[in-house]
Length: 447
Image 1: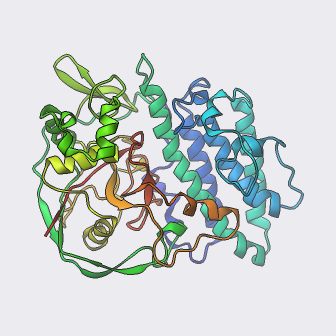
Image 2 (image 1 turned 135 degrees about the horizontal axis):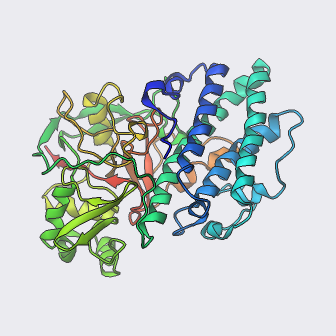
Image 3 (image 1 turned 45 degrees about the horizontal axis):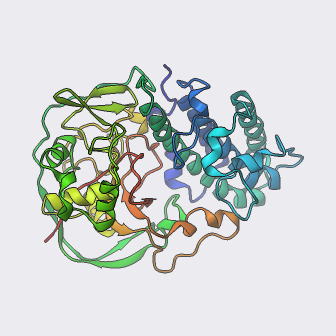
C-alpha cells in the first residue's frame, strides 16, 4: 500500500508556522500537498470502504473528500475566482456539514446512504476545484490576495482536520467488520514490553499566559491570549499506558461505581464498552487469556508500553480516581507544555511518523514524554470561550464558537494529526461519551 505523501523530510506544513505574511507560492505548495495527502490517505481503501458510515459521529471517506473540497469551492472559488462554474448544483447540499448560514444540507446520520455521487465524480470534483484554486492563488491581485490568504490557510487546516477524521472514521468502519481488515498491512508493529515506571513532575504555578499570542496560524477558539492564575501542581511524566489501564480493568474498575461520575456510571450501566461487549477500551479484544487490539494495521497483541487510546472522558476520569489522581486542566497542560515541552515536534509520533498508532514515547530531556502526538489527552476543562473571545464574522464564524457547550477540551494531538497542525495552544473538543478518536490521558495532582 502507498504511504501518505506527507513525510517529515519534506514537511509541506513548514510555512504555516509563520503565516503572518503568507507567501502565495508557499500557500499554493502547501495547498496542493495537503490535497494530495487526503487522496493518498484514501488510496488503500476500496470503493466500498469509502462508502460506509459506521455511526452518526463518523462520516464516509468519500464524503470527507467532497466536504473539504466544498469548503474551498464555497468560500473561495465561487465568490472570488473569475468565471468559476460550480462543479454540480447539488454538491453544496450534499457536502455542507453544519453551516446554517450557507443553506440546507443532507442529514449527517444519512451520509452513508449516498451511493451517488460515485467516488470517481468526487475525485473529479476535487480536480475541478483544485484547478480553480491554483489559478486564483496565482493570479489574484495583491489586495484580493491579502484578504483571501487567511481563508485559504484556514481551508488547509480544515482539510488537515478531516485527514485525521478520515483515518479515525475508517478505523471505526474496519474495526466493526468480522474480517477485521487492516487499513494498511505495512504499518510497523510496536511491542515494547511492560509499561515504564511513571512519576510526577512538579510545575510551579503563579500568573501565566495561555492561548495563541500571534506569530503563526491559530483557530479562533485559541484566542485571545490571556493571563491566568494557577496553583502549583504536578503532571505525570508520561501518558497512561495500556499496561496501566489493564490493571484498572483487572481490578474491577468498570464494576466500581465510586470511581465514576454519575453520567459515566450511567454510560457503563447502559452497556457501553468495546465492540465485542467487553468492559474495556473501544478496540480491545480478549483472545483466550490475552488481550489484543484492533489497529489500522489490523488486530495485534496489546502493547503494554503504548499509550492507552480510544477512551471516553468518563473512562479517563474514572482511571484518574482509581490512581488517586485527577485529570489536568487545560491551563495546567498548556503551561507544562509551554515551559517544559519539546522545542520541536520532529520526534513526535504524528501522522508523518507513519505509525498510525500510539507507541511508547521516548523520554524528553525535560522529563516529560509524549506531550505531543500519540493520543489526544483529556483535560477536566469544559470547552468554553476564552475571556474576550469573538467568533469570526460571516459563515466561517460557525466553525468553532457555536460548539462551546457540553464538551471537554483535549490537548496535544495524536498519531494521525498532520505535522504543522498542532501546537500547545490547540484546543480540540469532544463530548464525554465519544471515544472513536485517539483519546487518552495524563494524570495530574495538586501540589
